[in-house]
Image (cartoon, rainbow, N blue to C red; front, top):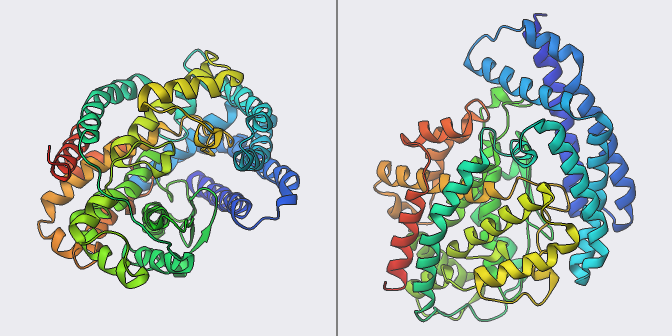
Length: 489
């Protein structure tokens, strides 16, 4: 075989093993027995040691030096393999395996601490996770910023200074709009009890409507909804609340955005470095545009109102227009995953600042809860009363995902850019959405974004899809127009 063929054969086997490791994570969060936490941590550490050794294999460096790509997709594969190889060489194998082992154990400890509102039970292992990720960031960054080095795992090419500038440009517009909205009367919330089985049935209907192929996927329940896998095996989870069916329905649409991205990548790229979503920011753009710009649009909620009444009977709102307002109800709350579109990014901006301080050593784990509560009171005007509604609410830090949080807001920014382009190209979109049919929009996204997998870099992909460089302006314009109309501003 040529050097390129040898390299790709090695990479495909590595990608297959990565999928196996991902399945272990899915199993841990869905059906694994509670008593298996320690053993699963050892299994995850062993898998990461194997994967790290494959990525750092000296043969990879030799093949890269000789490989000639046959086409643009091949060049992208080389770029991604080189990036993973250079990263693996910088991080000792023992450290990579220890991070995998500790974060697997920490996830179970976090879940128990959250359920019991027990910060003391979680802080020791969180301190261990932060220490390990600081060490990893330093190894990757050299003389640079360890946090920015960790950020590259989730959004290649992203720079902390650019994200800070973007987020700071958003903050005053978000705060001004939120203040104006909160001065107006809020629409009513839903009322009643909503059967979990009926929620799951309607969630599956929505998943199919948004293009999720259940022959290559499945929907399970978990504490924290997520999507896992790529290619022919892409699984999602959701959760139900008898008082709040939106939690189930919209988290399902959100995770379907992630899942269909993976399902619709060009099959020729399967089990290769380019055979998965290019970044978490682009991934989040798919889930957020499915959930918000499409799923919470006036046209689509009109259809959903009828389906909700068929499934549950009276839901406490009189008509489709009132239902649209209820779906998009703005209200301060503690939980990020339940936040409306105005508050969501403020949640992320807070986490972005706190986790940078943790990795830099400017904030200790022992002081994290107090720092969180103080910042939340300043940003949201509410005092956190329970740790599960505060710093214990998210799984991310327990599993070491430092650098992941800013990609949520970056995904919203990308979604704003993509939505503006879709509206330009699909003038009849609302007529389709009013029939409960988002397929024209999801087909547009499949062609412009999803099929490319990791062949293009994130910023280049958004520019090619929309014809414009990424900017926060379309998102902010969308939010001001939408909520201005809803609240009569």
